[in-house]
Image 1 (cartoon, rainbow, N blue to C red):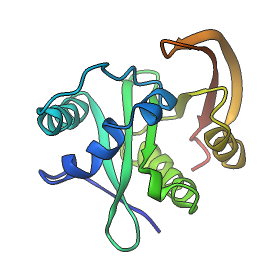
Image 2: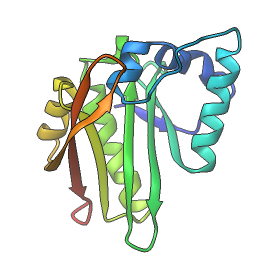
Image 3: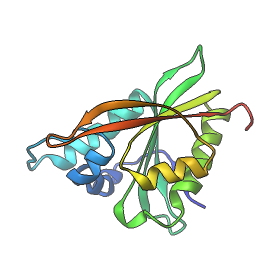
Length: 168
């Protein structure tokens, strides 16, 4: 079972693998920078700090306590009790069921710790692995944003999902 924990100073090294992978960044619709430089580790560390300051951000570890990715809930609306979910796994952590297991823990934390009633997320329409994960995990497709994400060469539709957490 994966563990969700607060980030520490060494996590930037692991998450740099996600942040420096342009293909993965586009799949996550993160609009990666075109230029990289020697400060990528510092930029990743600052990226983690910004996420922690403006939402809920956790590191995902596998059973061997190896950093496997991150989860974030951002744009949290406390009155209406919803937030937007972001989930990113390192390439070597994908396809092992870790995402599905982490998703259960994220949903539990959103409901119990953050007192949210609903999570929302959006997925690029060609990200079949993520779409299958959310379909299997009881998320409901609620719409499509047509020609919404542009990676510089191709424009992609984006599927919107929601999950009611009241039942948790």
